Amino acid sequence: MDQLLQFESVGLTAVAVLVFGILLIFMMVKSIPQGEEWTVERFGRYTRTLKPGLRFLIPVMDKVGAKVNMMETVLDIDTQEVITKDNAMVMTDGVTFYQVVDAAASAYEVLDLTRALSNLSQTNIRSVIGSMDLDASLSNRDMINAKLLSVIDEAANPWGVKVTRVEIKDLAPSPDISEAMARQMKAERDKRAEILTAEGLKQSAILRAEGEREAQIREAEGRKEAAFLDAEARERAAEAEAKATAMVSEAIAAGDIQAVNYFVAQKYTEALRDVAASPSAKTVMIPLEASSLIGSIGGIADIAKAVTGKDST
Image 1 (cartoon, rainbow, N blue to C red):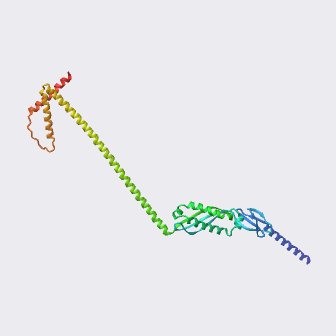
Image 2 (cartoon, rainbow, N blue to C red):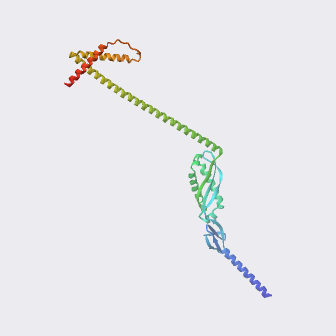
C-alpha cells in the first residue's frame, strides 16, 4: 500500500515537472510573425526588441511588453468644419498613411498612437486650410497635401513613426457658399461670352471698314486710270485733228479748192450727226442739198487720191 502511494506521488511529481517544463518552454520560446516587432521588458523595464522569427526569452524575468505592427497603416481622418482665411466655412476630411519605424518609441513615447495621429492630422488640417483663402484652398490641394505631410511627419518623428502620405479626400464649401460660387461662375461665363461677342463685332467692323477702304482705293485707281486713258485718247484725237487741219491748210495754200470742200463737208456731216443723236430730238427736218453734199464727198475723194499720189512718188 505504501509502495502504491509512493508510486502515485512520484507520478504526480513527474507530471507536474513536465507541465512546468512545457510552460517554461512556452514562456521562453517566442515566434514573431512577419510584419511585427515585439518589445521585451525585464521586471517592467524595456530591454530590447524582438524581430520576426524564432526568439527566446528568460522565463519569469522577461516578458513581452508590446506587439507593434510595422506595416504601413491607413488612418481615416474624420470630417470636420474648417474656417478659411476669408471666413468661409468648408467641410473637409482626409486620410493619413504612416509606418512605424521604431517599435520601442511607438510603444513607450506615446499613449494610443492611432488617436494621437488622428488628432494631430485634424489640428494641422485646420491650421493649414485656415491660413488660406477659399479659392486658394480649393485650387491648391496638392500644396495642402505636401504641407500637411511635412508638418505631421516632423511632429510624429519622436513617436518612431514615418508619415508617408497625407491626402485631403473631400473639401466642400457650405451650401450657401456653393450656391454663391455657382452664381459667380455663371456671371463670369456670361461676361466672357459678352466680351467675345463684342470682340467679334469689333473685328467684323474693322474688316468691313478695311474692305470698303480697299474698294474705294481700287475704284479711285480705276477712275484715275480711265481718266488717264480718256485724256490720252483726246490728246491723240487732237493731234489727228491738228494734222488734218494742217494738211487742209497746206492744200488751200496750194490753191486746191477741193480741200475747202472736204473741210466744210466734214463739219457739216458731224453737225448733222450730233443733231440726230440728241436724246431730246424725236424728228429732225433739215433742208439738204444733195448735190452740194455729193460734191463735197467728191472733193474728199479727189483729195484722198492726191495724197495717195504724193505718197507713191
